[in-house]
Amino acid sequence: MELIILGATFFGFLILGVPVAFAIGLSAICTILYEGLPVAVIFQQMMSGMNIFSFLAIPFFVFSGELMLHGGVADKIVQLAKNLVGHIRGGLGMANVVACTLFGGVSGSPVADVSAMGAVMIPMMKKEGFDTDYAVNVTTHASLVGALMPTSHNMIIYALAAGGKVSIGALIAAGILPALVLMACMLVAAYAVAVKRGYPAGKFPGWAEVIRSFAAALPGLLIVGIILAGILSGVFTATESAAIAVTYTILLTFFIYRTMTWKHFLKAAAKAVKTTGVVLLLIGVSTMFQYLMGLYEVADLAGAMMNKLSSEPWMIFLLINIILFLLGTFMDMAATILICTPIFLPIAMKAGMDPVQFGMLMLINCALGLNTPPVGTTQFVGCAIGGISVGAVMRTILPFYAALIAALMFVTYVPAFSLWLPRLLMGYKG
Image (cartoon, rainbow, N blue to C red; front, side):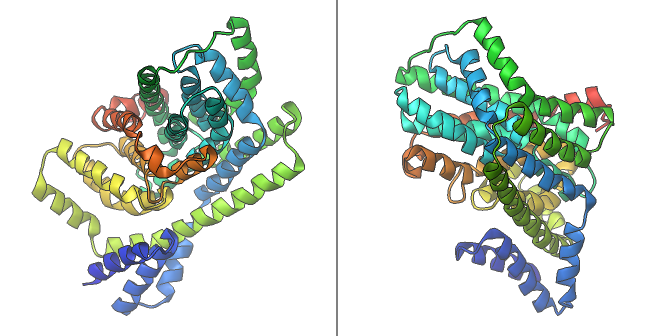
């Protein structure tokens, strides 16, 4: 009965339009009151969930991404991408994918990625004669690569939701190949649609211009290399790397590019504080939720139900993907990771999936949810920039969805995409 109350109140609050964080917390409170447990349990669980040293990486990575967003780094990355692939059929679309991938590497946030790249690329593509729905779909889908990049704070959240079963360093190394696979799939989709619609190709500016734009963008892109090199070599931890990312970004935007103003700095700081507050609230209330799920053995019940449907690992992985996708359509990315990881990670591990590989599966699924209504944060941002309705974009979304699902299937059923680099660079034994 307690489990029914927990699930019914949670989904009931969501249907009523209550924000996800409050729906999680209120459903946990209702269940605790029904159980007759001390109310102090609520606050104990919230504090224990948030009072973790490793979580310091989250505000630092968020702040670093906001500084990149407001510090003018995007323009230099866009120019580099245009010079590299702008001469291919549908060149601006291809450049958009590359630019979103590169900026996702330095921001680590799909929402920041679509905000920065969308503000530059969507108006540019419309001006050059590209359809608005194409410009928005390319931007919103390519921006999802940011969830897999070394600067992604969602990796930190997953590592902690996994209960210490996975190394943050291994996750950071594991995200590189899936990110490249996702970029390749998006390039194929963007090119296929461009050919079908007859979009023109641009002109190649010459290698001298490519080298010049690369040199201009290189200081911003170096943040990825600094984080990877530092963590993989053991010079600093993931938490320390996040602090270094902020320091480097401040120096870069104020003194090297000289594009950061005091007004933009305050704006970036305020946005980072707001995002961090939301994430920590989600972590706190999700810890209560996880406590109750552990108390009622939800993971064991879910595993038993899946085994009744099929005992084949490939089918279990497919079912997990479907469930995560459906949940991701109406839950925030961080909330989905915090709630679903304790349920589905043990099931996936029992079926033979490594926790690092499952992390990549989880992140791609959650990113896909960011581009799917009714929550669809990145899609709403892209549509607002493009001045087009969500319905109009959804009518032509299938090629880009197909690209995302193809990347998800590669990561799900080919472990080497997630595990080869951690094994090569870190000696990971998973």
